[in-house]
Length: 427
Image 1: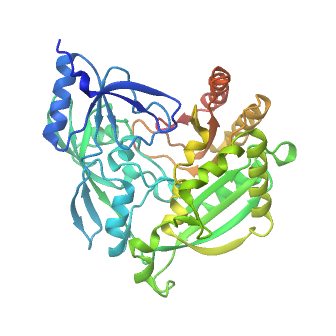
Image 2: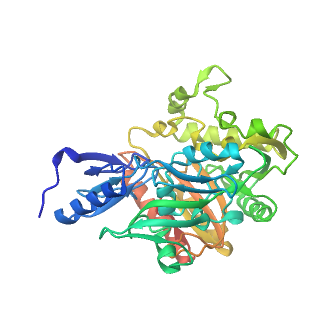
């Protein structure tokens, strides 16, 4: 057995900073470099874990004493057809670099996450969804072809027509079957860099779920925020945002809104305070009393002056809310956060989500951020998809209550399993 070089040993963490592991990190820039990492792992008798930009909240890209295959340096856009909207990318290309490259030609990624930092390779490995899952499905449904490097070193080109079983197994397998070293994607044609958005308040969980379902066929994007601190008749209250792309002719200056520079999120709050400092201002409020008041204020403002408001918003502003406050996760230091996201069939969603929200309150560990989405099934083998809803719950991790939090997560998961629901490996 070969001993791996100790100078490659690094500590890597999940995005939530709550879990980490030491491994032998390889950062290839070519397919040959990926093969080299596979060979090193095979001769040393250790496993390989793939890593993109490290945006998975938990331990999806972690494994102790293994080869960590960091694909972030394989970040070239290999080919772009601005007529058909077809792009070939290496796995380390991020959502940010992709949309900035294609938007000026009138194209946009058909599925994006709440942050623009994940890599395309990681997004396909997790088969990510967005706020438009009902309308557009997962990113894998817009992947035309992949080059897959198997652990043996064999390179195979795979698509849904030539090898449907392998294609549908690899997408969403979180890197367990091989490494995607090239992906071909079909992008979405857009006539403007703006969206038409409508904001609606819902006073309880039943109303949130009903309005989300009613909007799914009329709006491309549907996403809900829930005040996880609200109790009683207000349990599950929240705010919904619906959005659609502008039709040709609705934007009087499409050339301007389609400029990548015009999509950049502002650097300062009210043009004065650098947003890079905002997490420090939020840090003193990152506790149960503080977050209770923040959630209450958000709901009250959205249910009064903000209720039924309609406005236009840039694609980046609507899509990438998690990037609006840089380094916001640092408010959870020193112990980090976890996110529990469950996918529950339509008929059981209300009872399961009610149980989850009440369990957090009873255990005095309510979610600080709760997000609701509507979903539909997809054709992939290892899929988190259901015809129903997902609820993502963010929880702070503290050393004193870590074991209690882990026990609560098991309690949250139990009714999901009983209902035939699923979970999301990226979270």
